[in-house]
Structures are given as C-alpha cells and as structure tokens.
Image (cartoon, rainbow, N blue to C red; front, side):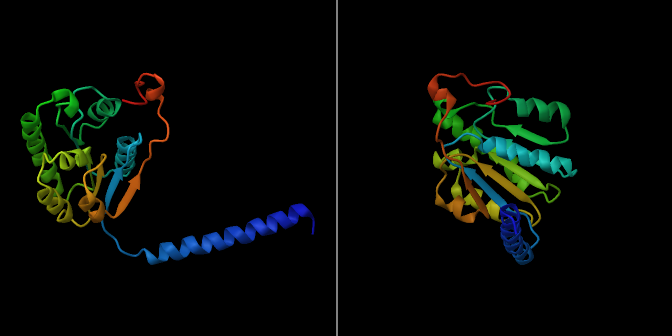
Amino acid sequence: MSDQEKKQAKHKASMQKQKAKVDANIARADEERGVMILLTGDGKGKSSSAFGMVLRSLGYGYKVGIVQFIKGAQLSGEEIFIRDQHPEVYFHQMGTGFTWNTQDRSGDIKAAEKTWQHAEKLLKDDSYHLVVLDELTYMLAYKYLDEDRVLNALKNRPREQSVVVTGRGGGSAIREQADTVSEINDNKHAFRAGVKARKGVDF
C-alpha cells in the first residue's frame, strides 16, 4: 500500500468514526420542541447571528417576530431589509437608541416596559415560529425590566416557539434557562484601531 493509500485509509477510518458519533447524537436528540438561545459575550456578531436565524426561518416560510431593545435611533441594514422585503415580519424597536446617549433612567425604564409589552404579545402567540429579543439582556442588567416577569414569559411561551435573546450581561438566571448559550469573545476589533463602523457590515 502506497503512502497516499495509507493516508486515504486513515482518513476514511477517522471519518467513519466521526460519522458514527454524529449519527448517535442525532438519534439521541428525539425531543421535538422550540428552543431558547442566548447569544452573549463582549464580541461583535450577536445580533448578526440572530438575524441569520431570521433569514433561515423566513426561507422556510415561518412566521417571525423581532423586538429590539436599545437600538432604533440609527437606521440599520437589517431594519431596511425587513421593512422593505418582508413587511409580514412583526418588527418593533424601542427606538430610544443606546442608554449612554439617552442618559435618562426613568425614561429608559418606561420605554423598556412599553417595548416589553410587544415581546410578551409575541411570546404568547403560537403562530410565531421564531421570536428575536435583541439586546434584551441589557434591560435585565440595568434592572429596567422585572427579571421574574421576563423569565416567566420566556419559560411559558408556546412549546413549538423558539426564541433568541441577545446582549451582554443579564445575569445567570437567563443563562440557566436557555437551551443553548453561545458566547462571542472580543479578541480584536477594528474600531479600537480607529476604523469607522462600516455600513452593511456593522450596521
């Protein structure tokens, strides 16, 4: 057997072993229900990942709802696309912009509570396959929303509904309740090197 054939045989054996593991894991995952996904961490890409799942759901013709906390003062590419190309998507923004710009705690709390009403409406509606609650964790970290109220709504949503929560912080309770937690680390960012945020990439 040549060296190339040995390499091929070794590779095939390795892939067969890996496939057996994957197949076994797939066979074990036999529960059919919606999931709660938390996208957190200091790195860039949490909301981008959530909107990737929005596109995925829309591709299958599923009904999607999006509620954005904090964002909304500055227009974003995803907002333009959703509003222009997919007006059937329930899309609501708190609209106050970043909390460090408003510098108005009482006003932010009122806006958060009003926005949460939209989220609660979606979390009670079993016609929605996917609900995205973008930057929700900030509302818990800043204590703008009652944590128990939020956790109860997430826990008691329709069984087949999946929800994606994004944002930094927010405490351990929401992390514990989530089925999947992905943390994006901030290893390097162009902005810190003086590069401006780029349209179509950063917003």
